[in-house]
Image (tube, rainbow, N blue to C red; front, top):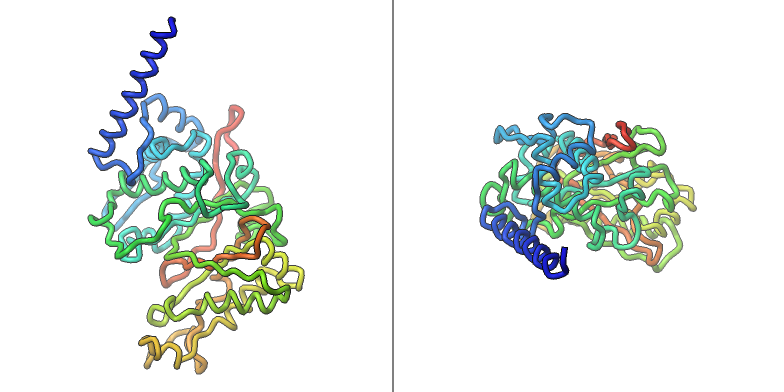
Length: 356
């Protein structure tokens, strides 16, 4: 093949890719960003990465009587820019999401526009290049971005939930389809989230839940564990997070904060209990915000006010990010019934046989 003919062939391929992208926009298949052209051969590569049958249902919206098969998920994962090796994590993310009551109850259509938070544990993080450290909630890492994006394209293209149509988000959540992180197990002072939730150490696993938002807590000013807890508590207990007699919160702790707390003797369970006991908003505070509890009753309401957590164990605690500033995130799980507290194994095909 001559240089000219090779260049001509490359030009034809690029032109085909561009026409596919424009066609995808015309068909409404994108989330606003270009998608990757997908062929039948590419789909087969994705299906070969999982032991699951192509016709198995992995995602569903019972209220709309809609469902997604493994094969349909493969198409959208490829369009999202995933590699075949990422696909088992996408499927595990859906296993986790389908275990959340709010997901099967129509949350994709909520006025909150909730965002899935996908948390990955185990050696698969390093093998796939899933970021666990600096910029873990930001851009720049293919696996994090495309795994999360694949979930969003499935919601859009298979389940049919699109903005200003079936999706009713008032404003939506920034990063709705980009929140996939690895836990920084190597620098965490505690057991991993997957181990906390019952899986063996070293298991490849995914946990997922829907979030309303993320809020940063910057405290590099103290080395006293209780002062850091009070700073986190102030964000957890803000009145804007109270909806009637309900609220929720989770912590994505930076390495410094996690190690400071552990060094002071706090286990994850201790942090959860402390936050439950102290993240309380008074009746007077709620009344000033127009959210007085009146005659409402519930397990979180007492003479002091409203406990902003339904129960200690409902506080997600995960360690992620870099050791370069003492910063953490408060996240807001969606829904009033709490999240499932489950981790789901990643089932994949490797070296000629299925592994998990």
